[in-house]
Image (cartoon, rainbow, N blue to C red; front, side):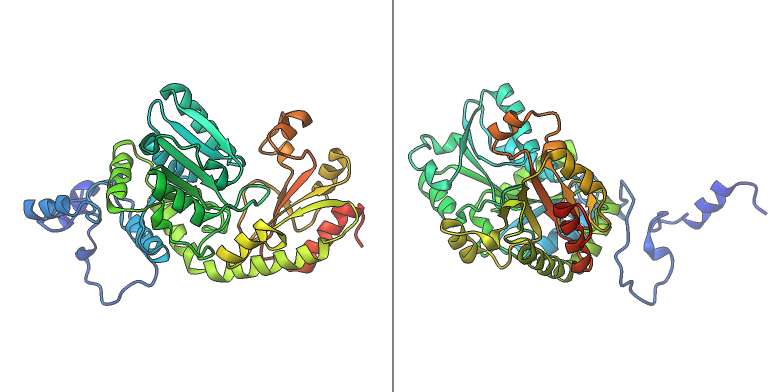
Length: 402
C-alpha cells in the first residue's frame, strides 16, 4: 500500500493532458443524457495556443468560472433560441439581471422613467442609485404618457414592468419600441410575470429585457436566478464585461437545475394556466370578492393589449376580499393544499397578502398611497388537482369547507 494518497492521485494524472477533472482520463463509449455539473473554478489548457484561442472566443471559451461555465453557456444558447435576435446572459438572481442594465444605462444627471407598478426591489435599487448619481426618477402609468416627456433621449431610460405585480396591468410593447426609435431613449423591460413563449413581440428592439428565473422558468421553488437579454452584440458585450468584473454569474448547480426545469416548462405552465382559468371561473361573482385581476379578464384597452400580445394569461391571480385582514390571515393558515409563501410561477400553489408579506409594516394609508389595497390577496396557481385548490379558496371565503 502506498504511504501517501496525494502522491498516488498525482501519479494517475502525471502527464501533459489530464487534470483531476479531465474527462479524457477514462475512455467513454457513450454520451450522457443529462448535463454534467462542472464545479471547477479554473480550467487548464493543453498548450499556450489553446489558451489564446479561448481568449479570442471569450464568450464561449471556458477559462474562469466567474466569466463562463459549461452550464451557463448551454442555458444562454437556449434562451437565445427562445428570443431570436437577443443575446442572453444568466445571473445568480433576477435582481442581478436587473441591476446590470440599470448600472450600464442610467447616466449621472439623467432621468429614469419607471412604470407606476414596479417590483419594489427594482424601485429600491433605483432610488439608491438616483441618490448617488443625481438621477431623477419619474413615474408613468401608461406608455402614452411619455410622449413629450423625453427631452434628451441619450440620458433617459424607460424601465417597464409588464405584466405588473400584483395587479397584472399590461403595457403596450410596440408603443414603447416606437417611442425608443423616435427619441433615442434606452429601454429596459421586466417580463417575469409573462414567462417564456407567451408574448408576441421582438424584444431585440429594446436595449435589455430581464426575467426572474426563480419564477415560472424554475417552476420548483428550488433556485434563485435571472436572465438578461441584450438587444445587440454591443449591449451584450457591455453586460458580459460588467458581469465578468463584479461577478453575479449563475453557479453550476443552479445552472443544472435550470436546464432540468426548461425541459418541463411547457407542460408545467400549460397545467398551471388551465388551473388558473378554472379557478377564475369559480371565483367570478363570488360573495366577498370585490375585484379580480387576471389578464384574461381585462376589458377595454387592457383586453386589446392582451389579445394583441399574449398567448395566455399566466397562473397568477389577484383579488380583493371584503373581510377583516386578521380573518383572512387566520383562514389562510387553515388551507390544506395552498401554502402561504412569497414568489410565484411554480408547481406549488402559493398565496400571500402583500400587506403582511412584501410590504409588512406599512399602514393601510401608506399601502393605498402606493396603489396597494390592504385586503388584496395574491394567488399563484400550481399544478395540484384543481378541485383541492377550489376547496381551499371556498374555505377562505366562507370559513368552512363546503
